[in-house]
Image (cartoon, rainbow, N blue to C red; front, side, top):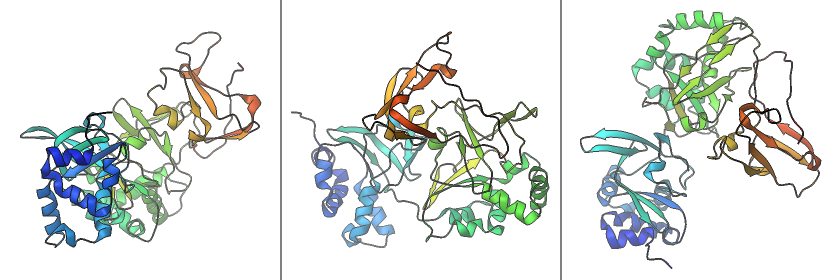
Length: 413
């Protein structure tokens, strides 16, 4: 037994300034959920904030809003996990809302000290209110999802993105990313005129000169320009938090890759050190402070770059791939600290064909040192019972087009 009260009980007993939210919860049938034991995080706007939202919608009271609108309202304000503000990082929250959309947070310094703004809209005025089934964060504004597509938001970018806007429109990508009938998520890397200027690009003609050098294998300026625009577009929803766990992305430009590397707190795009050709590309940092990074749109997200990124015809280079660096393993706090096991079904980039269906997990092992019997790259390895499988398929890192010699390193137990 416990004396802790539930989320709805807290509102009733301790803070009636959030009572309108509870009235809408009752109307939409979510009362049973936030009264039950569970793991919820509720971003709850005040009664005054909801009144303002209702007036902005052209209504007198919230009861005049359609039932579907009210249901989406509630679902967009609740995440199915317990998230304290200490769990927040500037950017995407680790769990989606009940409407399967992600909220973002950003710390701002105000006259009253540091405050957290949610979804570029409401400020948290009272944080980390503990209840038996989760946390409440009280906010001063209603949260609403962005209804504009990536294409529409590209057109809305300020004039210091003039060249990028012009190229995306001219190549047809703005219109393609504005199609609301098209399903699926997209991530688009945007570059300001200042970012272009860092590599001497001030006009479309300058960009074409650069592309003629980097993509000498493409015959016409029109095709090169389209290839540049397609290079900025990646299928999938990737916020900075997601990109930090990835090594590479495959853009819409054919036979191209975007590489990613987290160097301390800096996320670098396209850092290449080709020891064969003797060339070094230092990489371009993502602009984490930009208003247009982690900018959520109806069909994806924008990521703003501090400098230019574009397609390049690169020469062959060595690729070192540690198979223990699986995305699901890297995210775990035990990674390169201690041993653990992981269910086969959790590994999105390894597929097993089983001889023994009772085999359900493999071991992640951290050796913690380097010696004659433990010559493991990065002191870790995957322990796989070869007697229980018929085959394994791995998803490799993205490779530059070319011919490779391949060495595979393993050790029997």
